[in-house]
Image 1 (cartoon, rainbow, N blue to C red):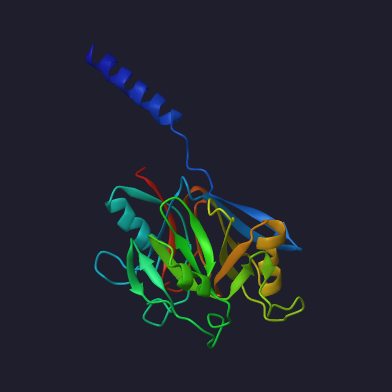
Image 2: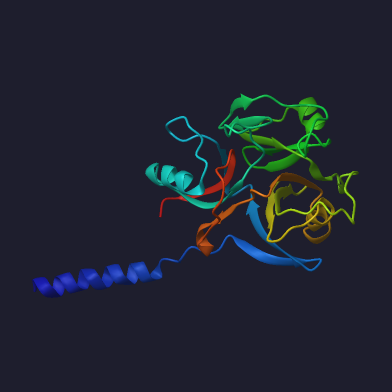
Length: 250
C-alpha cells in the first residue's frame, strides 16, 4: 500500500503544481510614431510599488539581481523593476529621495545643468493607495505624504502639456525611460524606448498614446528594465534608485 499512497501524494502534488498559473509578463510592446517602446502598467491601489537604493549591507544595490535576491530572502518576489532617477557616481540620488517614509535626500529646486535641471522637473511620489508624478514646485508647496519618492527631470508632460523646451525635430536622441500617472493617481505607466528617441516623441507617447496628464523622465542611455514574467533582465551599468513592483513569495 505504501507505493500506492506515495503515488497518490505525487499525483495530488502534480495536479496542484499544474494548476498554479505561471507568472505573466508585466509589460507589452507598443509601436508609436514608427518607434518601439516597452510599456508596463500598474494599479497603485493594488500593486505594491516601492523604490529601493541600498541593500541590507547599506551599499547601493546597483543591479536588479541583487534586489531580487534581497526580496527573496524576505519572503517577497520581484515582479517588475526599472532604474528610478538620476544619481551621482557613488549611486546616491541627485535629487529628492524617500524610502519607506524616510527622507534620504532633500528636494532640489530651481534650474541647473543637464536634464535634471531642465525645469520644470518633478517627483514620482508613491503614497498609501496612489502614485503621482508631481512638478517640483507644486510638491514643495503641497508636501504630499509619500511613502516612497524620487526626483528627476525634466518633466515630460505637465497638466496635459509637453515640456515647453521640447522640439519636434530635435536630434538629441537616446534610449530613454520614464513614468506617467493618471490624474487620480491610480493608474501608473512605466515606459522605455527600445531605440533612440528625442524628448518630444517620448513625451508625446505618454500624452497622446497613453493619455496621461503627467509624466516624468527618469534617465537615458543607462535605461534598464526587469520583467519577471517575460524573463527579461536588462544588463548594464550599476544603477542608483530602482523603482520596483513587489509580489508575494513564489
